[in-house]
Structures are given as structure tokens and as C-alpha cells.
Length: 145
Image (tube, rainbow, N blue to C red; front, side, top):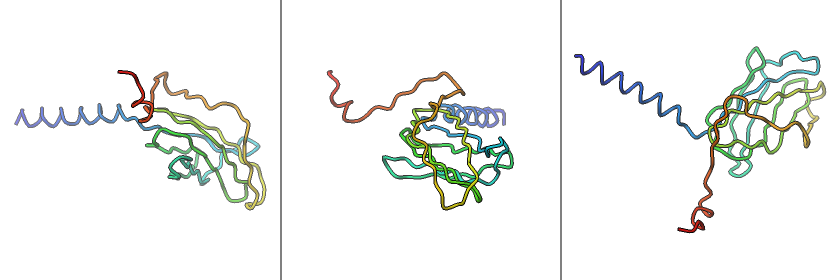
């Protein structure tokens, strides 16, 4: 019996170690209106510009969203809510195991209007100081041996 319990405990500990070494990135953020009030129920869509795959999330009642398990790459992030202009944050770069935090302000307006932000404060990963690297297969083959 003791061996079974030890085996189960070891299995659970190894699962957390595997999860902690995940290479994928997480995108989190806060969506507010011009007065600083949070916007619950806003739709946040992150689209990888290379693969065109997209992931969606909705903000909570606190205006917070989380999109986990994103492959490293460059993403266009689109945020929309009823009664507000859609905002697009282009070319958000996610590296290996990044935890990037975005703050998005939606302006009041008709839902047919869209705003594309082309110059804004650089996105900074504040969750950790870890560094990661994605190896491009072509560049890997070109490395001298």
C-alpha cells in the first residue's frame, strides 16, 4: 500500500514539473474604457500571423482575460465589446514561456468602427526574468559543426 501511495505522489509531482517546463506562452491583460472602468464580457482574439491560427477569450467581471498555451510567434490581438470601437494591437511577439500582460483601452463608439494601434508602448513581460529561444529549422541546419 505504501508503495502505491509513493508511486501516485511521484506521478503527481512529475506532472507539475512537466507543466512548469512548458514552452508555450500566456497572454493576459485588462480591458478598460476611457474612464478606467473595466469592461466585462469583451472578446479578445489572438491570431498568429504566420499560421493564421487564433485563440479567443472573454474578459471576466473584473475586465481580465487570459489566453494560455500560445505557441511562440507574432500575434495580432483584437479586442471588441458591444458599444465600443474594436482595437487591434498588431505584432505582439511572444517568445518561449513568455507571460505577457496587455492593457487595452476601448473607446466608446459604434461597433462598425475599428481602431488599429500602430505605435504604442512596448509590451514588457513582467511575470519573470526567464529567457527562451525558438530555433528556426533552417538556421539550425546552417550552423557549422
